[in-house]
Length: 492
Ligand code: NAD
Image (tube, rainbow, N blue to C red; front, side):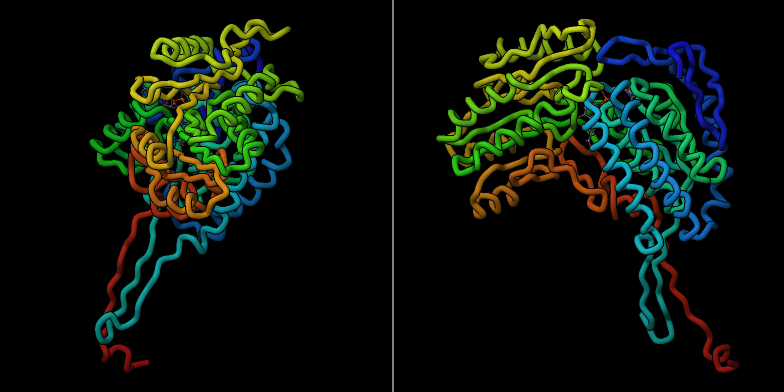
C-alpha cells in the first residue's frame, strides 16, 4: 500500500471500492508516517456485504464440514509462509515489537488449526429408544450471516478468534476491523482469497461507527462478536439484543496481580514486568494493578522499579527494542493525564515515563514504563482502565485484604497470583472473581481450544470466543424425535 492509496472493502470475492465520501489516515504510531487512507464505509457498503454473504450461505452450509475445512488447512500454510510480512505490517500500523507481532500471529494460526477440527467439534448427540421405537437426535446447524467487530490492539489475532469457527461451522462472515489498524486484515484477506473460500463466504468492510451501527441493525445478520472497550461493548450488546441478534461482547479490563512473600521474587518481577509493559500495556490481559502482600511489598517495589527503568523503548521495528509506542497522540495525552490524576489522588509517581524522548523517533507516541505507588484503593483511577504502560502498586496486609481489593473491581478479565503455596493458589483460584486466572503466570491468555473467559464488565454475553464455546455460539441446536411405523419396517 502507498500513503495515498485508499483501502478497498472485500465483498463477494473481490476488492470493491467503498461508497464512502469520508476517509481517514492510517498512521505509524512510532513515526507519524502516513501508511494509507481508510474509507469510513457506509450502510450501503454493509448492505452489499450482507447480500453477498446471504447469497453464499445456502451453498456453503450444504458443503460438507470436511470440505469446508480444506481452505482453512491452506490458510494455515499461507499464514506460516507469509508470517514475517504480516508481522511487519502489524508492527508498522500498531507499534508493538516484531516479537510481540509474532506471538500474536501464533495464536491466530492456532485458532485456524482448532477450527480444522470442526467435523468432530460440531457433532451432536443421540439416543435410541427414548420411548419404545422412538429415537432422538440433536444436530447443530449454522446460523447464516454473522459479523465481528474488532479493536486496534491485536490486528492479526482477534479477527481469528471468530473467523475460522464462523465459517467452519457453515456460516458466512463479515469483518469490520479497527479503523486504526486495517492493513493487517487487508493483507490477510488476500491470503484468504488464495486459500479458496467460495465468493461471499468471507467479507471485509472498513470503517467506524456507521459500519458498526449498520451491522447491528441489518435484519439478515444473525450474530455479532465484538471486542473493544467496555462502554462500546455494552452499547453493541444492547443494540444487538434489541434487534434480536445473538451477541458476545468482550470489554475492557483492569487486571490485578497478587504477590505473596513466598513467591520466587526474581521470576515474578520479570513476568509481571513483561505483562504490565509488553505491547506498551495495550493488552486486555496486561497486569495493571500489583497488590504485594506483607513482606513482599518492599522487595517487589524495588525490583519492579529497577526492571521498569531499564526497559528499552523505541520503534517496534528495531530488533533491540522491548517496548513500542501507544497507538495515537490522543492515547498518549490521555494516559499522561491519567498518571497526573493518580498523583493528584494520592499516589507517588515512583517511575515516571512521561515526556519520553526517543532519538530519531521524536514524533512517536512514546511513554516509558510508569509506576504509581500507593494509589488509594478508593481513588477513581484504581478502577479506571488506563490501557498504557502504567502499573499501580497497592499494598495489602494479608490475602483476605488482597482478595477484597481484587474483587472490588468492576472488571473481571484476568487475575493472577504469584506464590509457592498450593493452598494459597487453590484459595485464589476458588475466590478470585475473574474469568482468566494465572498462577505464577502474567498473561493468562487461554489457548485457542479453551474459551477466552472474561467476567463482569469485561464481557457481555454467555458464550465466549475460541474453542467449543465458539461452536455453540455459531450454531443453532435442533432436536429431532423420530418414530417409524412397525408395519413399514416389517417390509424390509
Ligand atoms: P474501541 O471500543 O474504541 O473500538 C473497538 C471497535 O469498536 C472498533 O472496531 C471501533 O471502530 C468500534 N467503535 C469505536 N467507537 C464506537 C462507537 N461509538 N460506536 C460503535 N462502534 C465503535 O476499542 P479499541 O480502542 O480499539 O481497543 C482497546 C479496548 O479493547 C480496551 O478497552 C481493551 O481492554 C479492549 N480489549 C478487550 C479484549 C478482551 O478480550 N476483553 C481484547 C482486546 C482489547
